[in-house]
Length: 371
Ligand code: NPG
Image (tube, rainbow, N blue to C red; front, side, top):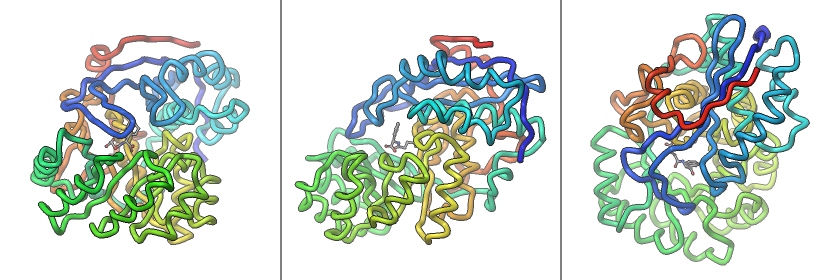
């Protein structure tokens, strides 16, 4: 187990990173990535984490102002009260406070990064990564029309991305998928509904079966495990769950019910990289493939995601794309880049990325120092 760090303070910053192009999903259009950057100040140096909330509670119930409030009033004070805290203790210290998994994940990552930097070990090796580079998939938002979507997909394929995920919503599903499949018959392709359907839409969802998709991601609501299991019996496209999987327990329930054939692992959604590791281990033992999802992370979370995605159970390409797919200027010095359709797994201590403090300063819109 990693040694405890002496936490002297926690700095929180709301950041606004402009996106290179708007990103539209069934839950809305983003033009700016809002997130909270966490700096854990320890007697041995700083550690960095990222809280992946958005401005509004539209992907999950978490949102930035709520995250800021719970961090300031409850979670950070709880972490600052012991003399020292080990990364493996963060979740249990924060456990009395319900929910707020994205906040817990960001705080745990900052402590973990600090401890790993002190120990001189990379996050990838700490988690048990077995790959030095990972295949990179890209998530393509809903476009003006199917032909604009085909153009956008073509550009990402030209850049080298090895797997395409398109966003769908009612009215923009079968036509968009048919257009992409017709233009690129052989590519690894999957669709993501972000909970936009119900079992009443079974005919539409069954209509996806003819496109040879890798999977349909989160077709139904986040609390619809039983309905997902019912849907799985009616369609042949494998169902992947994202929003529904909020913990290792939720993953276990989904597998038991037959609600998911594939699981998207996102550390922010499940309360941290250590819980994400437990989901990986569960799925690997069950023979269920997992892949690493993304939430438009800055260079901090993106580096950590690349480390997670290098574990052996991550057998499908994830949404770990290059930083420049979203950002003209990232807040780390050597942002994740695409190399022959792959991204390199960081090897430096901690998350393996160093924060560009001048760039961070430029995108900071609020700041709080807790001691
Ligand atoms: O590459 O980081 C990425 C984006 C992948 O589509 C993506 N993320 O529903 O999975 C999702 C979606 C998302 C974005 C979810 C932002 C939550 C916040």
